[in-house]
Length: 280
Ligand SMILES: Nc1ncnc2c1ncn2[C@@H]1O[C@H](COP(=O)(O)OP(=O)(O)OP(=O)(O)O)[C@@H](O)[C@H]1O
Image (cartoon, rainbow, N blue to C red; front, top):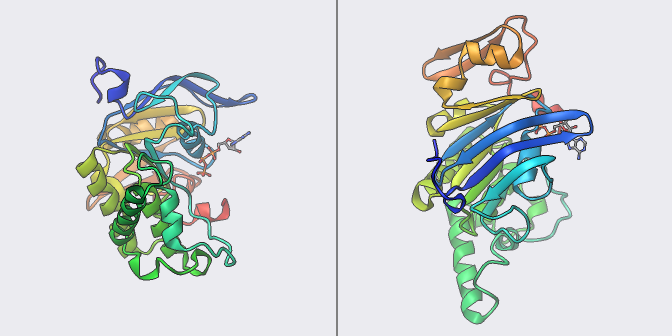
């Protein structure tokens, strides 16, 4: 938990009394969330509960209906370079001819190095390092449209990391990656937050692949939410109260399984990784 006496700039993310509504539809209200540097917060919830909308608020693409939001002490938006973003996976059109290396370079542009010779050299060095970190060096010069979904996703991770963000927003970044690359990408994100103190907000439908990394969970359901450690949030009592129905949370071999009493909770999805493919 963040020290309440910390100044705003010492918090990676500070949401206070945040409310987001589209017309009559309230996605969340009274949301207070301080994320400390280096903290890993998983954002969970069924389809439509407002996880991506939260990312959009933190990116400055969506205004809060009321309340305040600060990223590293400043308002979110284009001028705030503290944020790296790994968007939801969407396959790129095969005709996209931009090279992976250039895609990653976009994540660096606008940073403090300028375009002088030294800046260009630094840019190249950083891009090479980021490409190597995600294992994408071998295909960095190929057109991204021709790469597989998993290869494209690894480039997006490199793009988000190349600018050394203080906050890393990840919207289901493991989707479409095979198990080995899921591990590689989660390890990379984890190493980065430990090395640089970047805070991580990680939207996911599947908590188990990242459970060992998670400090706290923000669980959103139908306008209600709970923030706490996995031990506090992932309990039958808390989830039953959030979903307003009987839910059993079972821990098996260090994994968490969520079972709805009437089998209608596929949206919970820890046991059903396929549901969201239909939505995006
Ligand atoms: N600009 C908008 N105007 C009106 N409604 C919107 C807008 N953006 C999102 N919504 C609605 O807000 C709700 C939350 O959407 P959001 O994408 O944040 O959910 P999510 O939790 O990320 O869902 P999923 O798990 O399906 O990705 C949805 O019902 C969506 O239709």
